[in-house]
Length: 185
Image (cartoon, rainbow, N blue to C red; front, top):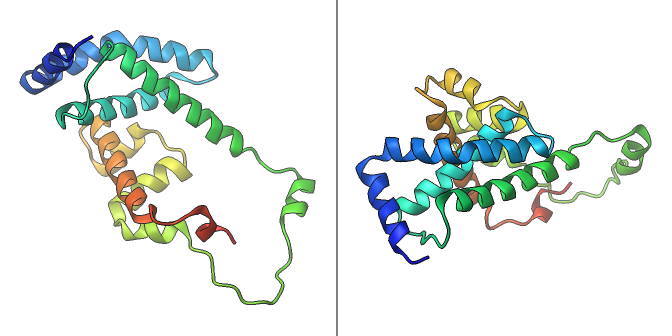
């Protein structure tokens, strides 16, 4: 496909953003929901994944960083599939340790003083109370975006999703120069 569909999508998003996003949502979300549910997720999981994909798509489109070579639905499905795979990977890494695994992992302190590892939470706290509350609520307590939107008085889930994304990007920038080794005990 040439750049014309992308150009017309840019114009549609600028001239009638609400209706354009609704059409994209109506066409693509059922496919995303089906994909996520077939792979062990819920409708809420599908909504979260789809909202993140829509934010990425919208921001890249309005910043003119996107030239589509396929349909919008195909592009969004690709993003959603990748996001869902990442979510499944994250969930499998969070399985609780058995007692024997926990004993193997813990080692008593040696008495040698090493530099204290950095705590991710110190970076989260530097983002401010709102970002800290949103990120901790979503990632630590597992709250849904609906709950977060209500807690912060946002008019809709989209606002909460955008705010979560912005906070996450600020956190990524803050720790981007560090490696995982800086956080290990």
